[in-house]
Length: 338
Ligand SMILES: *Cc1c(COP(=O)(O)O)cnc(C)c1O
Image (cartoon, rainbow, N blue to C red; front, top):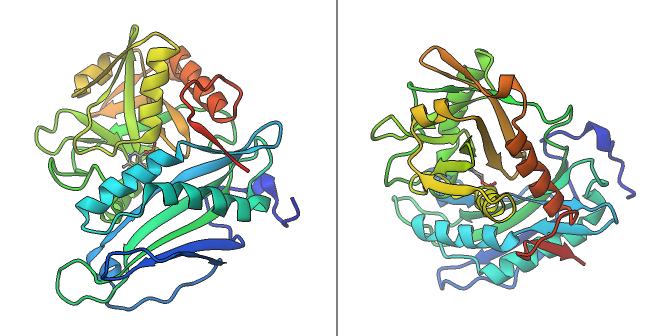
């Protein structure tokens, strides 16, 4: 590792790397051969569909260095499939899933010097699909760009696995029932910045969004999926207007297979959450974040005395170890970059 990076100073911020990837799809609907380019600014029409009408999707996944110095990705095919699904909804040509996985591996290989040492974080991959053709009326753009850039990022929990504090927002909603909440659509995100800023000013880490129709069921925690545990039962909001997290899917699988839990995807009411023994949320960046307390309508629920719950810790340990080839992976989720 030759790069002049202080691995202990990394946070979740962009650090320029050597290589990025770009492929373009013209109005004939065919993706070109694609190219690996030096990382840097790109040139785009001011009339690009992505800039004017938000025709864009993103993905996020990580490459990790294992103890024995291998570099691995976690379920990249799932990110490829999710981008493909999202492309349909936002009216963009899908980027082929097999090529997506190939590019994910190759971009990591070409930036391997930026994959942090074992335990110091990860190389975060950001695949994007944008309508880059110029278009004036509200309609699909005549040209699309698939891009992948990467950045080393620090470990999410630098000072240990600490529970977070959340508040249920009744002031804001994230997604309408049959809107675009279930795709990693760029337009879903700017609208969550103001609510997050507001609750952070009040001392919370994030807010919990309720479903827009009934304002009764938990949807998500910012950009992470919600879970709660009651006895041997693991509950999480059913798919619909929530983002189908790959970490969510993985947690459900290992809770069932490795811990023998009863896993239930169903509407999870605020009351269900308040009656639970443990709660946590999941996403690529942190994998699992333990929830220490939730405030709802001025009342506070504290889980496990504000400490990390035992099952939450077990799931975190199992999944993070599986991702590093330190726990059995009967699923073939871990993909080595060679
Ligand atoms: C990306 C994302 C998640 C988590 O998905 P992972 O695939 O687990 O990273 C959850 N909610 C939202 C809104 C997201 O954008």
